Length: 313
Image (cartoon, rainbow, N blue to C red; front, side, top):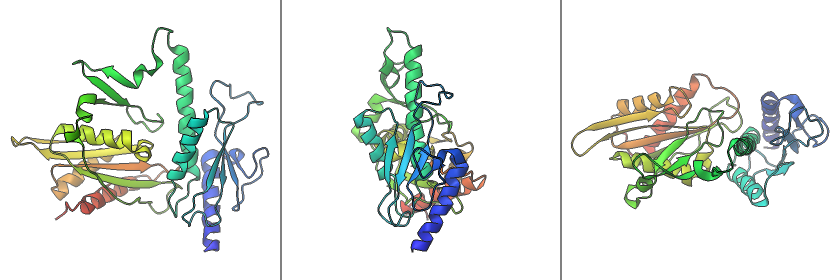
């Protein structure tokens, strides 16, 4: 209903004010007018790369969110508009498209979209800093793809869009992940939004069969390189367990910056006695800390993934 939509918008405005500060959220691009439920909302996201924070005359990158009439309850997403972003037309179009694709009905996107923009700004700053530090005879793109591993094999690296969540850079053997026989088919759960969580907070599980380590590597590469939404997640924690043809048991887990989460998923596999499987749980941080409850949600969503894959007896 309209009343419920307005109530949800008021709650989202409160979350935006708490997350970005009252001085950075308003209903005007040029004045600090208090944001209203009817919109549009303007969220100031920081200074352009290379500019000093004290330079008052610098135009600040700002995300404008034009609300659909039934937002956030309806199917139609809000319209994002970028002001004062130093992006090429293609990069701007790509970012706007990713933001719209991230929207789902009954989902607040203010903080999610703001952090997607902040991630892009952070990447731009890092690239600018690295280009200044790098000597002229070095190739700026060498850190991305095509590097050689210790055995001479090519390595493809996944660099998280933001370093603030503690995610590591991941390196994959190009020969392994490009082998068609190693490709996996995933079953993914519907997005789960915990109660009393921040706007944009979501958990999704991805489950696939794995019977050797090459399957695990390829599956992770598929998620990170081929699924744009997963690649933008705050964390992609995982655990796997498998029994090789010679009877050797192999299992491991990874927190992906969410300390203790990998162990929770490993315990889930042990308790359910599920084998030859990889379970990945993607989390998009919504701006409000969930405390220890986040581990309950991670295990719950992981279990939902195993159940959807028909692996629970």
